[in-house]
Image (cartoon, rainbow, N blue to C red):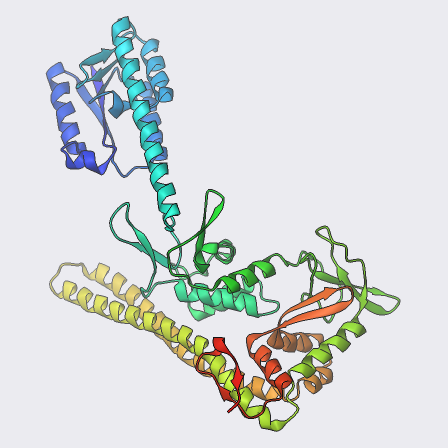
Length: 506
């Protein structure tokens, strides 16, 4: 009679104790030979298989025996065949369809068929009950362990971009990934770009960061859904969510909590507008300070009015003319325009300080790229030796050599791009320095809305509107320029720690 063998190992501990799949298969083959069964196929489930895959393989086994008219299923014991009542019912239904069908559970000394005695069926059902109980108990212990880990401040999940786990199983901790392929520096940069740049969408972030070298292993840009997920993930500021609760994590954060909150605020201010008929000056630049919705514009009697889009419940009904907003914007520009040329050196010092993080970011990325470049070079050398020793075919060598050289060239270009980025950023700072001396004049002299918006993006990180009054948040550099201009303290020095203060009298 034709038979199939069904082998299953559910844990590494079982495999270490001699219950490996090969040993099971040998044991069942010996049994089948003694019984005179013809083995048609062997089904095996390893300890690393997920519960979903185990269920799928069990279903495939039943379909196979039905389709190929297999009469005998041979398994080591009940809990190797099934651990739940649903699968047990499927086995019972299969047995009841034909009198010749049998299930042999060797170590349990149990043979099931359509006419099994009540005592044999009781034995089968009791063993299933205990197997189900074992699964339920294991599930409880796993959940208990995960909850305990979360209470200790360690995220119990399995994967976070920019991080890796270290330590033994059940005692793993999270650390920032410092490998050449690490996403950590790019993730930090993405948060900063989104928080500090007016008009930057996740799509824009993806484009900018792709040019910086943030890409998938296949060379394509990071999926937009991943950008949204990262920008919304509280894990990166040192916390995590477990069972709907925000927990304080022990892992080192990539960004500050303040930066994360700023990004969340901007994400809620998403522009819902799909159609654009007029190129209004402040389109996409302002948000309602009360509800966070976008500010839209419309033309009435020859004048442009701005008001909340009211996608959420909001009490803001006032429509504000563009001229009124423009007047307030010019006042804001006055606040970051030094009145005396003597302040130019202090503004320059501010800009130099702001370059520190940017330079550190590029240096970190370049360091990783250099390690990747060295690893690729070593791989090419090893590949060539393999070719000389004839451990690899000429065709395979050509294929791999071309691929690695392409990766090597791409890495070299990324290194060059980041080296130039530091210079470009410094040049941008120099241009901002010149710009800060005549901001209002530059803004008023530009007639194209796009150029005006670009200037506002350089100066402001956010613009708000409430009750006809415009609010603003300066970008970091111009916030410090504003403080310097308001203080009127021309003679000063730069503190070694900018977070402790800006200017101190000599």
